[in-house]
Image (cartoon, rainbow over all chains, first blue to last red; front, side, top):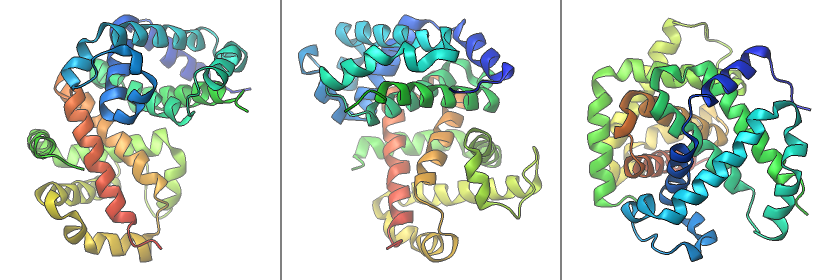
Length: 147
Length: 141
């Protein structure tokens, strides 16, 4: 089980309370598809992904980004039980979606940058540490059921 | 591969922070040591407390090297040849750490530039720092 200090928990839940999940999620997914274009391979049904502008404005990207970050929120609500929280999702990503777990790490890093750009100085180094730890734990949990 | 648009964005972005080069470098290193404590193993000879003169000086050195890289995007291999030798034969920093430092630099840029660190600039910068990392690791084996 992952150990979280009281401070880390506070840094995570405190920041999460201020996050606009729909906006942030949409932005994070769009950036993933723009910064690492090969990740578009999973979204051939999403329509126009031909340019950064198209990706940012794409309603399916926005909706899916919101869905992904909402799900990520479950980790924040269940910091002491992240493995169990994502057990089913892990199986799904392996068996149905066939997503290389490396993509979870890429999205995690992107989320950090999105948070940094939104929260600026409030995204302190201590905050970054707690959040990088969190995205790492989530990535690990999502990869755990792979076979 | 860096396109002409990428290079323009990188240049413009770097111009915005070049005034605070020292602060940017120091903050990136500071975030590196806090976020990824294992990176401190490369600096046993440094005072790593907040505000350390050594970290500040080293941050400036790193940023100056990146400034040189920005000026020579068409010829990174040659421009960074000395640094590449240094990292391969002398420092031997495991290349995974270049990605960690890249992430920290990008966080610093995002913190300072906010919305201006938009997705396209983000993509260009990520590519640029990857290219720099690749050159630094070029001679490792």
